Amino acid sequence: MKKLKAVAVVAVFALAMACGSPEEAATGDSLGVMTAASDRACFVSCNMAYNSCVAASPGSMGLCSIRQQLCYQDCGIDESMPPSSSVTFYAVGDGNGDDSSDFYRFTYSGGVISGFVKIGETGVVLNDLALDAYTSTFYAMGVNGSLYTLNASTGAATRRGYVGGFVNAIDFCGNVLYGWGGDTLYTLDAASGAVDVVIGSVGFSSSGDLACSLWGNLYGSGKSTSSSDALIKINKFSGQGTRIGNFGYSGVYGFEIDQSDKLFGAYATSHSIVLLSVNPNTGAATPVASYPTSAGMNGMATYNMAY
Image (cartoon, rainbow, N blue to C red):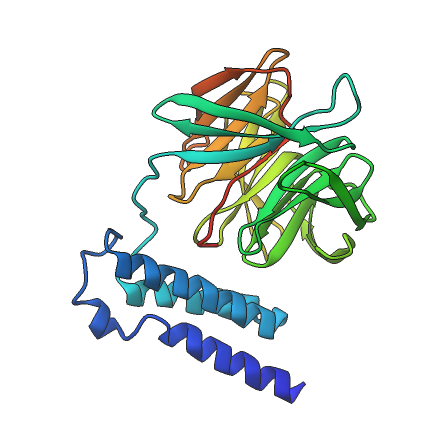
């Protein structure tokens, strides 16, 4: 135990020093604008050090998170990122018609969805999708309560194991896989699928997806009213959720945050998928694009290397 604590102290110290001193940061770009390659490298270093800190001592997540924020300040940046010119999303459908969810991808850019490709059939019905961006591994939650990995080339699902409870929303924050089902937040073992920790009550029922921001903040699509789901900010340590506001749309089972920290939601009709831009301060969602397909929308993911 003492050895583990010593390793954690070293990891936390490395996190605090990852981006140099505040005096060094003061000579960089203006606070809040991350434009230079060195800024991005410093930002990613903070997050890599955070992941190392948590891996060394999972019980020190709170301290690691504080050190991560200090590291951002040392970089001379805040929670502003230059926008992505385009975003590639991956998604799983609802399995209607053949009891097998489609695994597909599409690109959003300039108000248009293009490059829609059905990668393949998963062979099972899934209710959410998550991407471990560091290993490029796709994870999916089955309606049967099992966790799967998906073959990135064919979509074929491989069962990891039974979760042991109802979960219909999953996503990674760093190297931690979170699950939300009913009104309870969990951490899941990505290797076995089993629940690692029952974190606590969110206070809201999951509509069907989780997303982690570049800054380690956890958000979800939660049930609010019969006519609208809502943006919920969730405390990763207690599970407590805070309703930011209603989307204005129901069935928002796809929810993701891209590389420039922009929030997107998605829902399906019988003949199309609709992509939404979500205001992080109010929760209000605005349709930005749609694409004609009957694949359905049960979960969405994208690469976000700076978790």
